[in-house]
Length: 162
Image 1 (cartoon, rainbow, N blue to C red):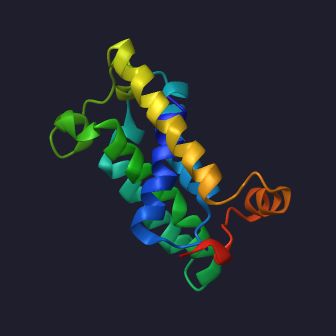
Image 2: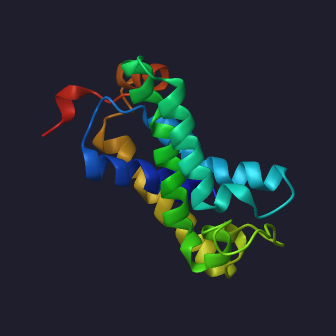
């Protein structure tokens, strides 16, 4: 699942914060990270817990003490991982989501993202792709200058905020 998490995460963050200064590239990275890391680690695990996102948030806050600009940029990562948990429906597996509060066993056969019927997976990917198309059009990323600026900084044009 790529488009579902990347597309919905940036649209949700935009709709909630309407902030052009957030690094939306890092929102996408954070939203994709739990599946990537857990897949590389052999299955469902630590990065699908609320603990992992909270630890990441704490690390960012401690590591960027006194560096406001860097903190503002890096906070996009835990925001993305928290959104992944929401978009994945991770709370439906309470034992995993609340690890280690409800037990210390981690692991499973398939990441939550892929433990759905194929028709649901395809519908989610289509919705994510539509969100990215909306994003592309809304922020005029077809314009080379805007696209270059976004790819370089992760930010959006301030002139496009209504």
